[in-house]
Image 1 (cartoon, rainbow over the protein chains, first blue to last red):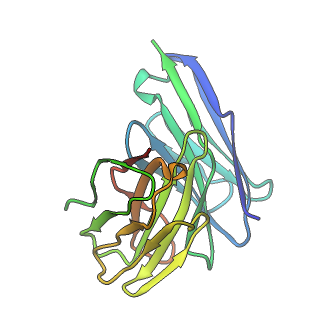
Image 2 (cartoon, one colour; image 1 turned 90 degrees about the vertical axis):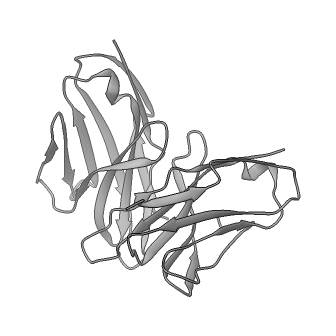
Length: 111
Length: 114
């Protein structure tokens, strides 16, 4: 059975802190791993990672994939209150047309 | 482009009632899907479609029906609502090109079944 496990499930930090969110997976025929940010409404796309060791970066957010150890991390530096959200990790299985989601990490950034 | 739209935004049903959640996209995407999101559970796939006339079951299909008569629309039907179907429902679409696995989500429908 496919599994995507995120940790921690929730995290509370102060503005300016750096956080690391984790996503491990066991998925048949892995093709790609995706990160989404969900504030009050729909998830919005952050990154798609397909190759090991290549960092994707967007402003203060960055992510990397390790296909040998089957995990990814999402880093957020100099956190702001606007980073408060649920961060979802999903894995795309080849041949299945499906994204398998983890349960999410709820990040709260306090001023 | 409106992207992915969903109606209604909120709905309250009584147990046993039926209803249809509407989803439409104007990006000419082949792939469309329905998810439900419950607290602490992430997103779980209900049904999906890879093109007009083709649908398949996801992880939690029981109690739901779908059809895809056009590329644009993918309605989700609740046949006889149950309190266990209280949830937030998201529709998503994707262009279904090799190497492009990102899905675009609608704003969601919050459903309460009493």
